Amino acid sequence: MKVIFIKWGSICETGIMNAFNRIGVELVVMDRLFKSVDYDQGYLEALAKLIEANPDAICVFSVNFQPIVARCCKVYKLPYLSWTVDCPSFQLYSETVKYPTNRIFMLDRLQWEKFSVKNPECMFHLPMGCDLPTWDSVHVTARERVEYNCDVSFVGSLYSEKCRYNSIAKELPGEMRGFVDGIVAAQMNVYGYNFIEDCLTDEWAFEFKKYADWVPLAEDYEEDIKGIVADTYIGYKCTEEERIRTFNAIAEHFDFHLWTLSDTKRLPKVKNRGGADSNRMMPQIIKCSKININMTNRPIKTGLPLRIFDLMGAGGFVISNYQAEIPEHFVPGEDIVLFESIPDLLEKIDYYLKHDDERRQIAKSGHDKVRDYHTYDIRIAQMFQATGLV
Image (cartoon, rainbow, N blue to C red):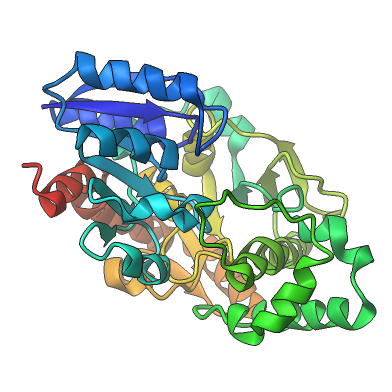
C-alpha cells in the first residue's frame, strides 16, 4: 500500500510515520509548509502533482484536518484521512469537513459529537496512541540517569504563552473579568466534566468578542463564538491557572522538576529544567522520573491527551487528573493513578514514593496495556478498517 503523508510540523508525525513503515505502508512525503490552512496556490499545485505522480496511492494522510488538503483530495476523488490530535482545532469549523472524500478522526468524544453532525458518515472518534517500539528502544545512559533523576516531573507548557485571555484581561469590564475569574476558579475544582461553555450565553460570548484580539475565520467557516471563547480564552486560562496552582503545591512538599519553555516566575520553588525535545529527551526524562504528572488541557473535555500514552508507553508511572474516557481504556489503580483534588494528589505522590514495588508494577501494567491496545500501529489499522481501505 502507498499513502501520501502530509507533514506540517506536528510532534506526532515522526511516530506515526514510524508506524506506517512498520506495518509495510510505503510513504510518499509532502514535506512543504502551507502559507495558509485554507488557500495557497503553490501548495495546491505541488500536492496535485504529487497525487498525479502516484495514482496507486490509496489515500492522503495528515495529523489534524487541513482544509487545503481536503480541497485537493476532493478534486481527485481521493480519500483524505486525518487524525485531529488538537482540541480545540479551528479547522473543524471549515465547511470543507463536509466533503465526501474526508475521513476525519478525533481524539475527544465530545469534540467528535460536536462536529460529526456535519458529515456523520465520514467522522470518527479515535483515541490517541504512541510510538511504543521507539520508546522501548530508548536506553538511558548512566549520565542521563543522574541528570534526569527526580521524584516528580512534568514535561510541557504552562499555557501562559498560549493563553490569549492574558493579553486582553485588562481591557475587559470589571464584571466580565470577575465572571471569568469565577468560572476558572470553579472549574479548577472539578475533574471529568468541563462546564465552561455551559456557563456562557451567546449574548455574553458576543459581548466578550468585542474586547478580544479576535482573528476572523475564513468566509467558508461556521464560526461558533461561544465555543471559541470557552475553549481558547477561558479554557486555556483555566489550564494555566490549574497548572501553576498544582505545581506550586507539589513543589512545597516534593522534589518536583519541570521541563518547559514557559515563564515560571510564578513557580518560585519549582525546579525549571528548561525545554525538552519530545523525541530525544522526553523518553529519558519519563524513564528517570519516579512519578510523571499528567494534567489535561481543559478544552480536551473527555479524551486522553497524547501525554498519557507517551508517559505510559515509555514505561513511566503516571498520576493524572480524571478524564471520562480513561476508564474505557485503563484500570485506575492498576494501570494509572488518578487524583480528584490537590490534597488527594499530594497524598498519592507521598504514598507511591514510599511504595516502590507498587509504583513499578502499575508502571509495567500501564506500559503493557499501551503495547497491547494503544500503539500507533494499532490505530492506523483501526483507521484503515473504519474507512474500508483494507
